[in-house]
Amino acid sequence: MDLMERIHSGLTGKNIGGTLGMAFEGSEIRPEVDFYSPVPKTAVANDDLDLQLVWLAALEEHKLKLNAGILGTYWSKYIDVHWDEYGTALRNLKDGLQPPLTGLHNNNFTDGLGAAIRSEVWAAAFAGKPRTAAWFALQDAMVDHHGDGVYGEVFWAAAEAVVFGGGTIEAGLAEGKALLPEKSRLKKLFAGLDELKAAGKSFEDAYSYTMKHFASYNFTDVVMNGGYTYAALLWGGHDFERTILLANSCANDCDCTAATAGTLVAASKGFAGIPERWHKVVGDTISVGAYIKLAGVPKTLKELSERLVKLQREFADAPGLPELQPGWDIPECRDFSENRAYTVSGKKILFDGIRLDAARYPHIWGEMAEFHTVITVEEEKDAVNLMVASRGLFIVHIDGEMAALKGDQACPVPAHHRVRGGRIIPLNVKAKKSFDVKITLYPASPLPDVFVGLYDWNNAQVKAKFEA
Image (spheres, helix red, strand yellow):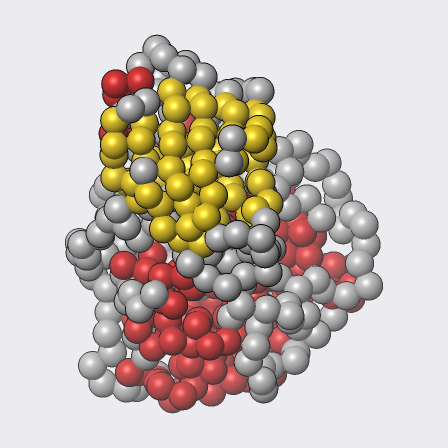
């Protein structure tokens, strides 16, 4: 099997896994299916794949000079998507920040899966050179992640580069693990799963272990979902169908987990290892989301693979390629406070950003707490929504009128388009720009964080001033 088939079949496996899992993305109920359900007419658009088309163009233009700063520029120009860490990065880039600060500042999704799912472009362009693939994955991930959100892409890029280069899945996983910093939760999770596999335990034991020790309220968490993918590869027996179905059976971000697992198995076995019934449904066409604003992107997996093979051959003998070595870490950067002012039960406190850290208001322990601020919208928007999220019960008043009530103990995922543990409140910005906001938080133990942010209906963050 040559390089072209390894990359082409791997990307086909990614397209298949992403299409399988898309119907169940975000579900906490584990699907029990043995095929696409429903069966689509073509592959679905998926950020797992189409974001990488922009990175392909960046790599073709800038070659080995490509870095996190250039990728941030491409992101600002050609990717109009505002979910979670993507939107945070776009806001930070718009405000003039540079990586790695764009992935850290005001980001409640530093450990999201959004970078780990776009590792194949680096793995293919540097097939057989896992530590160079990992270096470019680091540049990529720092745009919108920090911590394990970065480590996840480095891990998968290294693993895939080994397999795209003709190595085994086991060798790829070992290389990826060798590059994970000791403090990484992913490294601890993978070690635990390795022990279970060696002890002859079942896939269900692996799932239970992952959920017991690494479960997250955020269904896109890179560690929890990384455990699903890793376990599917260990227990899948190098069988394409079994592996993607195992990943998909864990629910949560299963379009991503099945896509990554499908990539590695398909690349290791080629098209002969992909059952025809899975392949013929998705074909070779790439479905590109409307949020990709770049012209000239590949329209088929074959074209994408050919362009990646061309880059790989160009870089194969290049001297002085950058590499990550064990012991690396994300470059340090100093965060800053946005000085959002609140009066919390009579005490004025400045907060860093969207997250109001409970450690900053211990004086409300055991009391009904009032968070009071005046929010002034600083951008011209047709519509602006206020997001409030917290664990426990709360009431929100806008200009003295009750605007929202939360009466449950759901833990927050502070994402405007899928807010959990919170409420979205439309603000009439056509009539006025400033709003008196009071959040009454019922007593809870332990004290919960509170998240307050402004967004438009495209999920883009809106700039505002907060005055107590």
